Amino acid sequence: MVWKTIARHFIAQPAAPRKANSAAVAALRQRLTAAGHEKLGRSLAIRHVAAGSCNGCELELRATQNLIYDLTQYGLSFTPSPRHADILLITGVAGGNMLTAVREAREAMPDPVLVIAVGDCAVDGGVFKGSPAIAGGADAMLQVDLVVAGCPPAPAQIIEGLLALLEANDTAPRPVRVPR
Amino acid sequence: MRLLSPEDWRDFPGKFIALWTDAHYAYALYQPAQLVATPLVDGAYPALSHRGAAWFQRLAHDSNGHKAIGAADTRPAIEHFRSPDGTAAWPEFSSPGGEGIHQVAVGPIHAAIIEPGHFRFSLRGEEVLKLEARLGYSHKGTLGLIRGKSPRLAARFAARVSGDATVAHGIAFAHAAEAALGVTPPERAVYLRAVMAEIERLANHGGDIGAIAGDVGFAFLDARFAWHREALCEAARAAFGHRLMMDMVIPGGAAGDILPGGMAAILAAVLALENELPSLTRVFEDYASLQDRLVGTGIVSPQLAQAYAAGGFTGRASGQDHDARVSPGYAPYEHFGLEIPVEQDGDVAARIRIRLAEIIESIRFIRDMLKNLPDGALAVAMPAESGSGLGVAESFRGPVWYWLSIDSGVITDVFIADASTLQWPLLEIAATTAILADFPLINKSINASYSGVDL
Image (cartoon, rainbow over all chains, first blue to last red; front, side):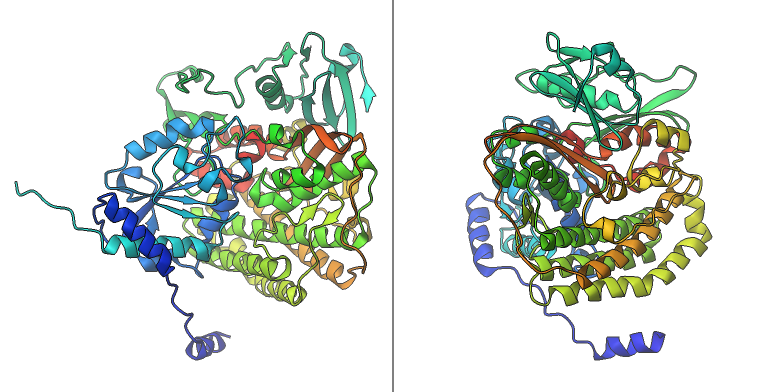
């Protein structure tokens, strides 16, 4: 049994590497440059906040960490603490009851911060658009750098979005350090 | 529906499932599917003493402004921020008296990739004396959005009440709309719905068992079950075009047929799970370090489960033999016979054992249903008529109930009772049987939906 598994691993072809959509990278690069965004390191930590989702996006977000998608191979990881995070990843609508919590999470993060809206609800409210209980999508609370549409977006789509962010970040100007 | 006097309403015996109000009546639902109502007087109705009724009464107050006279618990359910600038003060959370008792606040933003909710623990050392869950953070106004729409349009909202149970919610909603308008969906659609519901059950049971193992640092089971969950999601995509099978169930039938190659994909994913399940079960049962964390943790006693009429694996792990697929029952399960596994221990380990047993049953269902898949149409039109109806479906976490009132093909009123509503209070009590560090484990083992109750 074990030998069979080992043999299979020798024969198996590695999966094609995932790549970010080049158009998305170019557009993002332009936006980050225009906003004067400073370059972050290469290994980025993500703080996820569900601001009013149906928990579908969370399922797919969690799946990015499984052994098939293996998010950490790209240097990306989820962190519980906003203090350690470079990316604020929002799922769900801007729920009225979550506005304060999202604002406080953003304030707890050290600048510069990249903000991603994942899923149709975070993009513009999705099917819940127009509900009096919500303020809209993530852009009703924060300035959003990248959106990943889908209801919910598949793990591969989420990873491609994050890769676009990594690539665009790579060409952002390095922060100017003032000598002490 | 039976109309009751306020006295009969208050004293009605039975296992309570849900309570809601519309413009004229307060409704209460009892097992297996008994609906009673009492007229509202000045926007108020007598409170029910059933332990599960509190959340529903709080929700009716917040969403419709109707008061439950004599209710002991009048905390807000979803309206936490009444002031226009959204900066309402935090409420006082009470602690049991005694020396050295302190509170720990968790949330609404949690450490893991999950939905928002606030937990307030009262602790003595590590021992949890009291847990108060403050929900409502993912409130999106779903009930209001469903009103004024046709059943077909509104199905999109039912599919997004709780994304992990999107198929079950879709089926319960469709059952309610079909009951209200006297529609019988075609057999093929009924079978396809059930296949989707069982795939959903497998994916969630597997994923959650793995996640619980992962929570205690047992990465092997987490990795293997996540792999199977992924295989099931990809099979669902191959068969129905969507990894979670969202929007596939519509009132009157199914939105599409099983795609070419889909059946083979489902059967392959199910076979892979079936082949590995015995060895995964053995690992779960044999590793002392795993069992040590799970056995005796987060106990829900059978008496408690009975008092709350808890459904799903949470109820079945605590001596309740209720399953909506059998009672009240719905098509096509009557053709396949269902073994309901029941345990008495009521701890995290028992809930996992129930879910492992349910995986085996679901695999059998999927095979049998696909083998006997009837030919024919996929959906029938919904007439623009009037009526009201109840619908139920057994989601992976328990029964999901929908009540719809339809006027000339437009939904005028709706209520949704996810199984989670009766499980959150159980979590609050189960948490007090363990230490704080065990809470994530207990929470995951019950896995009540936040979005499903915040509506």
